[in-house]
Image (cartoon, rainbow, N blue to C red):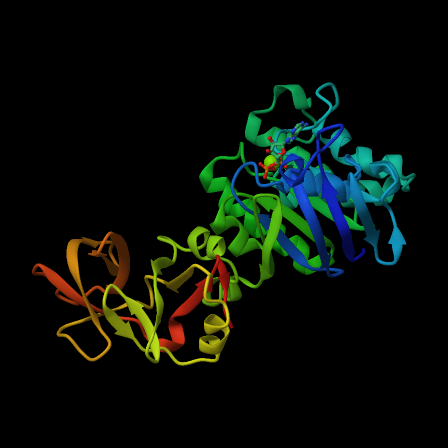
Length: 362
Ligand code: ADP
Ligand code: MG
């Protein structure tokens, strides 16, 4: 097992990249700790697979170095990196049985027959493949094939890291949930460095201890699920994580606080001097729907917004309102009665964030 470090890694699929726009991965410096459960999370096309393939060695980055612990592996092919990689779609030998497929990576390493049998049985049990061990892989359903593929990725315990690229794409939702839990168990038991690629925030937040949020070829934040929720460092993280995501409102410095549509919202914090020193920055206030308060009557610092809709979503109500041209969402407890033409919104200072040119001001 190893830590994984990127030093100035950048990648372009162009032969002669001209400028930054030609890079699928912009310059990236980051480190994944040994034994960590990481998720690479971001929308399609943001560079997740590119980064994963750079870790595994399927791609050699245009620039920069990749280290496993202190060892520079940038030039090493996948076979010499001692990693396991699971892809989005099954990669198995159709003519072999399930058992032979699972045993293959171990045979390749020259393990003794008894040790192979023991480990194959363990993995088959974990993935509930015992019933099909003797069957040829060709006859399996898509779900089962992908489970075999996953099993091949998990069967070796001596790997430096396990890399998974959207491995549950072809798995049905019920089984997805089960497999996600199994993967977490495998991580807890063997302590491999796991890098799990997904565009699904639920998958990332439930699997990983550390979520690496990617956007447009960059890592915009590495944090625990709680960090991403409480303190999104980049506007994109606020918007992408959460359902619905963070509310953003353009604002400007006014008096001791922020002006939004003629109302002054007072916020505490050292950000004021920081924002004042950057007069040309685009300022936005960010607040999660979970934290935006809907008051029964106006209070100092609250703003009046036009009520659009109240949706009852079971354990909470989702209130949508508009302030000038901006739509805002608030989640309020189920029992609250909310109606009429307008609502009064309050931005609790400790829960409200300020963004300058998309980045959190601290
Ligand atoms: P993700 O896995 O997050 O969806 P990718 O890493 O696959 O993103 O792609 C990042 C960017 O690189 C995208 O703009 C994609 O079109 C481009 N890209 C990916 N693979 C190739 C390739 N083999 N050749 C050229 N461009 C590619
Ligand atoms: Mg991908």
